[in-house]
Length: 403
Image (tube, rainbow, N blue to C red):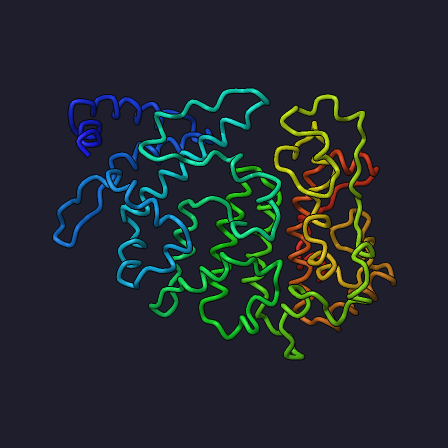
């Protein structure tokens, strides 16, 4: 604590001021600017007390708080403890924000080439170790079935545990959603619509996972986050037949899809996964060539030089069941996001009308989930070029279809 006080207000405070000015002077669009400011602010953060006085520096408690920095640990806290932890200016939030910022700076430094020394950010670590991104973005933890599908603990996960509904914390639902992914296991809760907490928690988890995917450039996590948000938004919507939208979208076997229990290979969209080895000459050794086109999305291979992991990060490969459910009985040419889509074609009009007839308002939910998924697919330009087709036009919204 003495070292922190010296840095913040004592003999070393001029160095802090100099660092702060340098960080503030960075361009607004510099991705390192915000995490650098978060680190500097966290070092000298204090927590207001009930008497209006300021507490000792929050950073002095970071070692003591580290064991509580998991969803499972926070879910075991009493409501009065959560009230302190969840306060907007709490020391716990400040220290979680610090850890998030350091992890973000590691990510911005990029993955290491084989044999390269670790990133030298020891000066930012403080008294505890911080996970580097590649310690969780491994092939094992990218699978949807692992417990920590939501990644390492960070500030966004504090918000998941701190969800409150009607004055009550939803920490038990947060632990439930953390332990099992509701997209992978639609039967996680027999009737999620009777729970006042589940959907708000799933929504907050979706935001956290999508942010992780965006920051770590992990298409799997970004897509999963969007699906969790879609679950929270649409799962309990009800059509005029009193059917919940989750019975069409978030299920193992939607009743209105032809042969729902058949092989998922019947629901495939263009482009198909493909590996043209002649296009891999500039692919970095950070991405092992054996990873490309093996059916598992690898963030380290998700860029143009590695042909976007050979298509392993296409939505249909990562979430085949959800794709089948969202597409329903529509043919590819009748998807509104196909560049050649013509609603006036009798065949497509019939399929769209059937979709509305069978699903009601849940048909619009299906198209919206599909639109979000295909928007990310459209980034993978080399795959579309290889298939000689135009990327999806994901800007087309439901009003476009209704016209």
